[in-house]
Image (cartoon, rainbow, N blue to C red; front, side, top):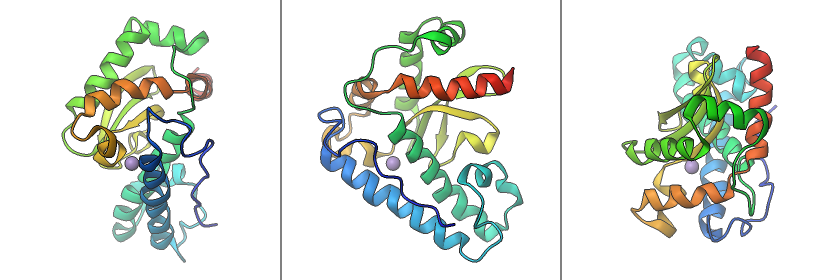
Length: 205
Ligand code: MN3
């Protein structure tokens, strides 16, 4: 079954002014939409066409070379953007509570320290890519990936990711990636992050 562009779970102007409407329209409809179309083109009439994007990224090395590069870029782009849309909501922000809040405290000392580290990783990342809060099988960590690489390629579970490609912020913030990252925390939906954490925490025991 072909991969599909998931509809945004909110209106294009719902995250404004943190994420402006034009940026979100182009980012979702064009950038993410193009990844989905290119992924489907690469997988068409192959034995891999029925696999989920998560399955594909977790076993990238098994794919034939000509398919692998396309799945890495466009499958990664599809998975990363889907997670991003689901991680944002209007008027959110604040701090995680419950088990996730405790795990963040244990790993980073505090939620503000996690935010500082993830933002700093995003600012310091050279070129296009993503900054992540991941579960690496034993606990939480902050990391970055280049281009559209997914933490799933390393066997890690992405819990929260922020897109630091210029297309994610340039219309509003131009070169000021740090401003974009600072504001972005205001639309992070920690409840969705906590749902992801609960699943991986059970699996990790
Ligand atoms: Mn993007």
